[in-house]
Figure (cartoon, rainbow, N blue to C red):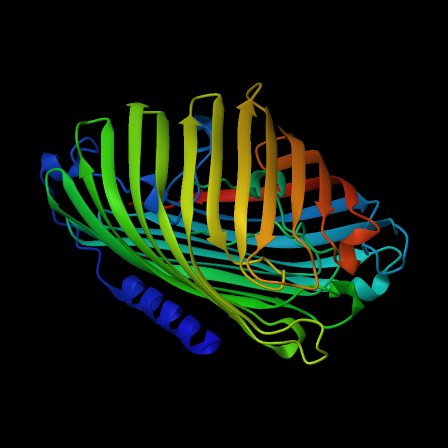
Length: 447
């Protein structure tokens, strides 16, 4: 199923890419952003943009090379019974394409990499970071979209521009990325395809299908964590009450799978949500969603008899709120969600309470900063050998332009995880300092 789902996603991407971007003119009523409706954050699969005005670009080809180094005081978790520190070195070639025409928008990036550890050399690895995001409008009122992100690494933090790659979303159906393993082989892939149709001046409908896969390598370094997969679908209706106010309703379905001890735990959810978004200004948005969620969970007995088979059906509330500000010198996003989600590596689906915040600041023409923080509390739906737990993370970084093409970034990250899992129990804290230098080129593309 994982392979077939992935093929469907990429097949849809190819169809979108192959479709012609007809250059015919559109009337003012369809090109004016005040007339065309936007997709409210609670039913959007995308993250809030915190790109500053000075950093916004479109129609360019970007390529370059990033060299990074990081020191961590806990690279192996509790696999050795005590903290193990190490210094790593990474090299990432990067290439990105952002292309916008009258009806088609491409946003592609790819960054393979190589990471080497000074002490734990057996963890040396080739990294992969890829993103594809496409929007196509076959008519002035219909928009098709496709997205896919992939990361392969021995460490989730191994990617170029770590601080600026953090994200916050106002969506109600997103992957759970709160459980963070130390050095251990990890492959994640999340994507989806969707469509929106504005059938009147103030009415918009849309739908999306999504998938996700998380796979850990075998071995003691991921003891207590499980592979998982997810498929989902959603449909929504949005009505623009006024220029600033949107209201609507959505139906969302999830099928969440985890594979502890070679078994399969399955949770299916059905949610009916109401949502409201207000845009007090062009730069500020506030969003809220809430409604009942039907949950059906099944997990088999563990062969050793440690846990009996479990099956339950229940109704739970689902709710969330978010805020987004995008200004000339400051951009920020803040969100809270109380939803049923995949366990992110735990042994089943969870009741997830998550708060995340992200801010980007411009101090001068060449100096920028970013601050990110997140707290997540995971409560497993069924009995498990691992208890409930929580994760807290915080990152602060500075970026300095050293010239037209050269950029320096330094930062610090603090991570605390409290779970009754051998991997985290004895050594729950990680401190990581990082530095990188990037040499980038951006070539403008004609419209």
